[in-house]
Length: 467
Image 1 (cartoon, helix red, strand yellow):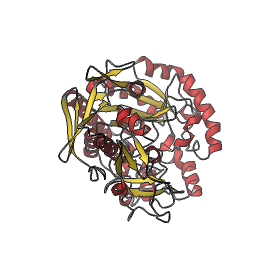
Image 2: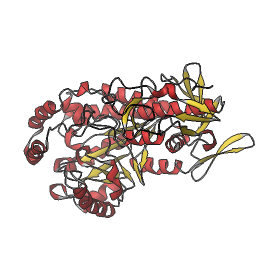
Image 3: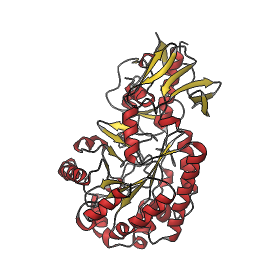
Image 4: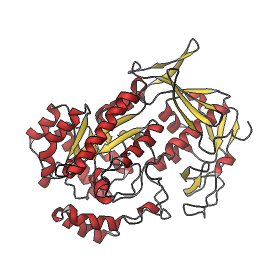
């Protein structure tokens, strides 16, 4: 039941024991674990008639400690999976509907979309996305519900074992404070033509990036162009099939399309994938032969498909590693919000860094090639990331590098040797031992004996009953 906690922190299994207090409800429902952490799943003792996103029972007071185990009224791994896979999007979720209102309207819009300029699409999209700021969950502009949940649970395990601190394997190589990756989805021929210039801009900042290319129909590109991307040291991934939004329409269309996607992954020599318009269903990802996916936003208030995975860290969906999009897309920033500053990007980056998470950036060549203000903002964003790399040990890596590290880390273990914890496994030379402790009302993270961060404890992290 504690697999999600162990997988995230890579902490010693002997310190992480949980049990369920009683039989769980038949149906999944919303509840709180602490005053600030909304969960969704089967829960013991909560009436099944509960519905809605407010007024839910806070079950934190039902947590207890027994024989070094934390007794919970839910299965923590199920709760984490429900958040990461967006399973909380039930009928009682305020933002569950597609922002294009219905299948007929959606079909008409996407049929006409290739013939619409941005000037025509923009007011339609703004109308469809109206009232997005009223959505209560996930939390805008960055949601860290999964991180709060797991941190709270780890502290409870620590206290149940009478530990002053608990060791774990730090999230990033060489003790980096956080990670950032830059990606470019290419949607039009104009965007394809701008790729060399965008590579020059990324390269001048010393920032690696990946390009996601649509492989079929009017977006198809030449073998020489694909080779050029790789030859210049950039990554190449598959971007859906034809950018028509049809791939995830149904399980049947997904299975048909996945066979083609898998063929293009092999043909491109690619490991990664991102769907068109961030359409997705995590429970269908096992049909793909990709190593990693980048289709799930952290908060999807400004996406055609609402929801969000509520985490700023990579996570596994079966054999696929999800690298969530954790910052706003350039199109949404420039054309929906009408903002050409990088203030929102900087705010999101600061919130992600506070949790030591993954800063995932998506900028389309299609929306900056003939947009001086947008291109200027993108340059400023790259410079901001470069400064953080130099001043705060931000690790900037291409998605494939992040995928390889997170998979490597997932196989590492902590071993107690002569009274000291060491890391064992392939890649142990890059990994670092870290510690989480509680000092007063603060959670404290240290890496290699050095203070990495101090933050107020989330409400609800007190000692469990019986301690």
